Image (cartoon, rainbow, N blue to C red):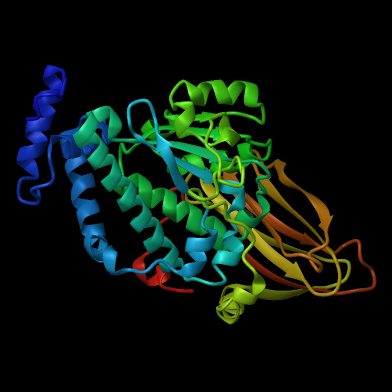
Length: 397
């Protein structure tokens, strides 16, 4: 056992028990620090930690994680995936900055497949993990986790309501939670607009408590978040945009030479738009709602916390849309008030959490139109709280 580890007697016993139970799968580089990550993620339950580790090692085999050096990150992700290491915090842990508003997932997923996006994320996480291990060996265990800054300035929720974008985010969160426990030291989410609260309320349903406890969210008030960050990160290791002293040679305070800022992917780069359109043909249902009539689609989520997502468009004219929940006593409650939307101009997308069980009715209402039938192309789905996608699904463009 590593001498520097300070553990209570019950924690030391759990570590010994855990080590014995996974002896058959341990590699030479799997030291006590490695084992403790899984134990802490499962609240010192050796049996639960064993299952988590074994499942993760199987996942690594499926994705050939140990051979990802051979995987070449697609150029669009090198150029447009916002992230970078700017320096090290006061404990010598790496500081990762992610200008999240610069992430154009809609554009990226029109150039690369979801599997390429996932493999790229794995490769980046593995690189961060390697740096953490090197820093831990040099400076002690406090340097073995990542300090992260998410900059949400100009964040727009709309693209994440697009089904493929929303699903890839959930998939990546779940992948991280299941396979990279306890590598996060602290995460500062700064410049968070009001709409971010909705996005985070959905995302945190797929996060473990130990991850959520390390996240600090700040609104667009630098007087509050800059002092908090500077308590942990020295100014000379931080971009000037966040209160530090680092700038690019041209004076850019965002340190774009080290931190990719992302940006809008040019449509000229789109390579699999045809696949997207074909995918839409396969998953979208087309219906005609006659003048003066309604279409009601009933859904019964299998468990509380399920997600009800929608994406639809109409031909030529608008349509009224809403979601109504039927209560146990027979009364109804508006989840999304019925309102007219210009779905003929822009695809209508959204997602709500089904906090309680019941019948959720998606309503397309054309009763206000006495002259025109309306053709609707829709994809309505119920996603369980523990949504996962198998390898076959992930290979689809």
